[in-house]
Amino acid sequence: MHIITFLKENWLNLALVVVGASAIIVYLLQKRSEERAAATKVILQIDQIEKNIAALKAKRSLDNISVYKIPAILEHSSWEECGYQFYKSMGRDDIRLIDDFFACAAELEKSRFAICNSLEIAWKHKDAELQARIAEILLRKENNGYNDDINTFISLFNPRPDIFTANLPIDILIENLNKFQVLSGTTAYKSLQNISYRK
Image (spheres, helix red, strand yellow):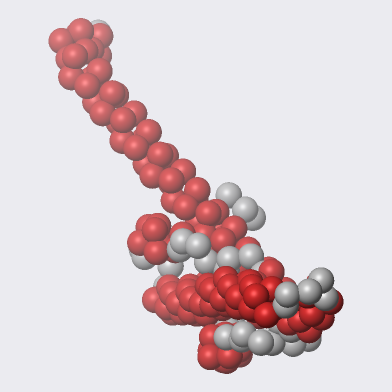
């Protein structure tokens, strides 16, 4: 009898407690879901970075063209974007390991981008040089024999990819490749994996 009377007199307070408790539960579940999604995003990016770097390391020799064909190593850092969410749930050493991984990936991307950028500039200059030389041959020749000179020049000039090279960025890229440490298989990677949707 007392319980029924208590419920009748305090139903509004009890309803507020139930609503408040359910709101807290929903909030905690949402935070957990956001953290799992962020960890999954970071893991996927780590896997992609390692795949791209493995492809780069598999090249017998690193030249401009082989580096140009490799996809971007790090366009944006998921770790920088959402890594703060894991500071409570991961150890300091694991966080430092992931920080170092993404810092090295950023340096590799900077070198790759510099090589690609210098290649594009070199190709523009090479084409301008080619066009200038063809114009020079055309201006010098008054007879019909200029086609042979142009074709000879093009056949000598075009197949030479080593005419314009980006040696400094390639040297830096190789140096950073030697420093690169794979993250998968480490405790840091496993910690992220435990938080993520990928098990």
